[in-house]
Image (cartoon, rainbow, N blue to C red; front, side, top):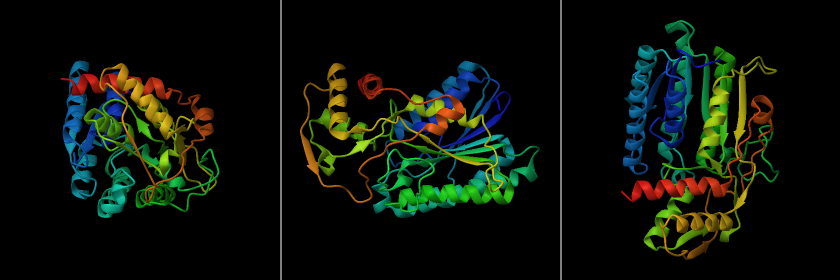
Length: 349
């Protein structure tokens, strides 16, 4: 399925992944209309979200198509979401809007139920009724899941065939719930769905609540950086460009029916190369030093494992490679170098 003359709804368009996806579509498909939907909440610095939206508008204007429309709305607001479906009649829906973060889910659980459960239910309902409301309806629903669904699984690398019935955080439980809801709606209402389990996404213009960004801010201020499980943790860090390449590939391929007669598929999108957290900090500091963002390496405070956290993440991307001939491969050094250059330029102004 190609994007020509399609209307694509991207929820979470002011967010990290949603922004880069909308930008990529606008740059490469001038005949597309991208409808961005986001509540622009203050979970982290709103100015970053506003900057992303400014770039998207600028990108659309440069294409001279006026192909980007932004709607400020919450997924939990069913009337607002339904009005968007009624007015713009999306062909493809990419649901990236969600309340993110494992630790935040322990202190603010209501936000996760509202956005990730009720909000996703509203997306599914809008897709379901699209077939009655306009010709063709939604041809493909792609949605964000998370590597967090694997919980504390001991078997690595994590495969989409693995059992994921033991989440260790509410955030992970909501993402697993999304996968279950998508399958049931696929069975009942024939909605083709693909879920994407993202593995520790990083890059320029990213999320300040992520470790690499938070570490940078503390290093700049000369503060200690906190490293949990005494540094004995591994993460499958995945650069944003690799994530977007995976999402775009997946959007174009409607899943084939599974053994239950449901057009349903799950993919991991990760770098398949777990990095030790202490090594990660060393590489980050080297990149920041090279760009002149910091003048010396920082102090570390080694702490016990936090509730809801996991020891390691490690993606098996065999399905992704087989179906699309694509495998994320940006090295941590290359990715963090690009991030450091952006940080210097953005915060140095």
